[in-house]
Image (cartoon, rainbow, N blue to C red):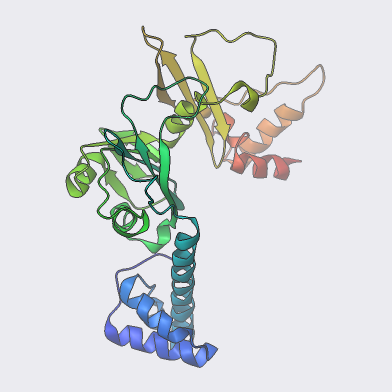
Length: 319
């Protein structure tokens, strides 16, 4: 279901009444409170306008509202358990700055707030400098926009009253251009400049989520990687980063004259799938034929059609 703006008092009353009838639970009071604060899917007008049963429509709406109510209770209890509340040790020390990090996917947004000393060195193969202050996870469907999530985190959930980060870096599941991003699988548009103005954060930088993976790879220690061959890594040499998820993410890193790496996004996953096999093994060629028929014959077949979450389904179907 999709979130809609807060429904009117009459709709809230009807949904709550029907919820009482359907469940007979004391949760109706909590549901009413949630409807006043969050969003509810108002399915009744849409369904009844097509001649459907008003009882079924209200039941569907009540069920959706119950999901929101259940999430609200879980989010609050989870916040109490996991959010790192500030203590004397967590308070900002002289010279330290607050840094906000975000991982915004199509389904979930995770926010992390750090305190960092600007003069603390960044050391390759070591965790990034800074101490975690708070971390929270939010389901995107419960919010109208990323701005609503960020406001809730900074004002209530991070544990610091009126937290004001100096820098924010947001890793987003979409193409980033001119410090703006429109999500691939979510009807959200995020502008770094607008976030900076709204939340008074001096620097807000938007990056592709796999670019963030590339920079994160630089922090991996030798005991956190598995060698695939006997090649000796060369300092300053280009680095390729590939990761299969829903799609096949790729990026590459190039060092500048000082040896500092800069990560760049890539659409290499859309390169052609090239079948291979020893001698008379035509399995991958048959897979290519299968995918061409499945995808209307004339379509080119990219590597992402084979090596990804959807690729697993394609290979399984073929086998």
